[in-house]
Image (cartoon, rainbow, N blue to C red; front, side):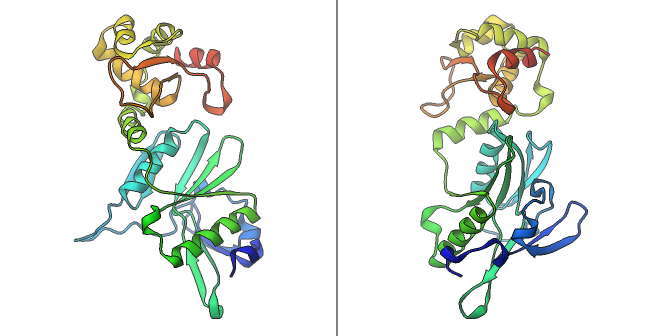
Length: 260
């Protein structure tokens, strides 16, 4: 199948429902399934001498574990979890298949299915440029065209920016809701309303040992915000009140939510 000729009815989709039942049918009929809630289409292998690292990442967005098949997938999964516009996601959500040369079926399982807060969909494949063989390029092109045919977005991504990823990994350590302390969060929102250095603001809000974990949690939630791309988080990093919140909240709503 040429990517230019892809139609939703010509692509078959197979997935495993939340109840464990395997379902199959044309993409044109199954596109409305809530794939952010399905089970992985295939298992994550683990064996001696394995070259890639599989595992399960606890997602604050989903409130549960999402699988990955490499460190690179884990990092991308973490970035999706950090994205305030993402409301749900699943890994290895379905397998697509279509007629290839000579009628032989070609199969491909995307890495992630992502649901955004406005209801739109993003399908993600994680593969660095240098690891894309000609056959892989065809699969990605057909998958992208299949997604377009049902109104989904598609992205093939590689390694993220190193500085951004290092900062997000750090903040991810404070992503769990148990870190949140409403009374401390309220003080932090007041301190950083007009912007301040990270450590100085933490000192103003109280005991650093108690305050810093909450500060990092609010940065993860984007109730507070800072530049995560030009340098690693440090004591003098400038922090301010966030302008955009989950589901489109504004800064005033964010401050109210942060304080309890």
